[in-house]
Length: 275
Image (cartoon, rainbow, N blue to C red; front, side):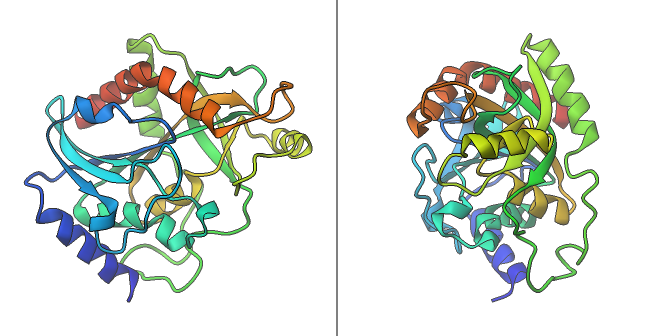
């Protein structure tokens, strides 16, 4: 079945369950967004397993639910959890929720993640505005037959992350008295963390953070003409910077500690975008 038909069917199913049409959506990274549902009113919770063509989420810290509701008067959609390439899922399926939300009418996507700091000046608990990315995995969700109704065969990648949304994010971080770092995010396949040598390479290539998600979704969203904003929660220093070994539990713990500031920043950004 072609992508456009699958997108349309998934969006049609979602439409049968909700009465609002959000133009803004948020993808929550590992450990983020666990309490974000409490911020919504009049929300509808839809398990991914109920939505046509959505795979099953298998990564700890990703709840696998689509929430649609009102955030301080603004209708939004929230993807609590995402798919990763390391789960053995095809990239076309990894990005399918983004495509379904586009068909549902979403125009702006806020991609968040929990990741490692490569820049030694950054610290666990910091937030980083993604200004650009490095695709180090060597594949792309747009590989395969292209549907010109969804996006162009050869999309431009010079401004995947919206400069207008960057301005809004900076203004909102300042208003909230939150330090917002800026930098390049490198996509690493996983599920293994990087070796010290790989981190040295990634730093030499110009990345400030490294993680196992976000880039495929950003590529798919940009391909469809969506406005993309990326924000990372730096949950640990990348391999080799400090002596301790990395663990997913550390990622979840630091993300949880950053939850209140994260929620405040996202709420402020959503309100500003809506205006």
